[in-house]
Image (cartoon, rainbow, N blue to C red; front, side, top):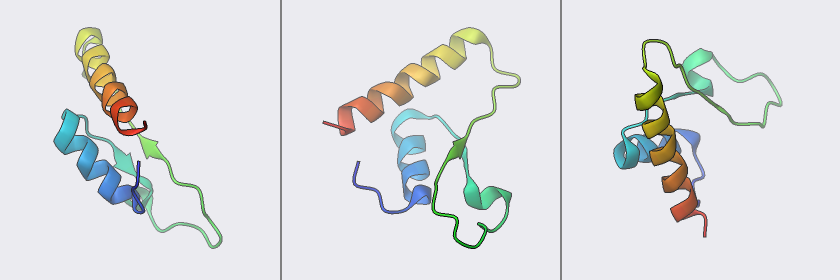
Length: 67
């Protein structure tokens, strides 16, 4: 998608979809040599319909920017 920084990706996703998630730096410094990037989503307190809507918005955003 053209992002070189996972934090930029997180902010763009939030702005485009309203879906919020945490990145690696929210859980401490990366280990020496750590090169993988990931996101972490929490689903507690979200009903099934809202969760499905958010994941659909996120997926559609990813798909529309991956072509």
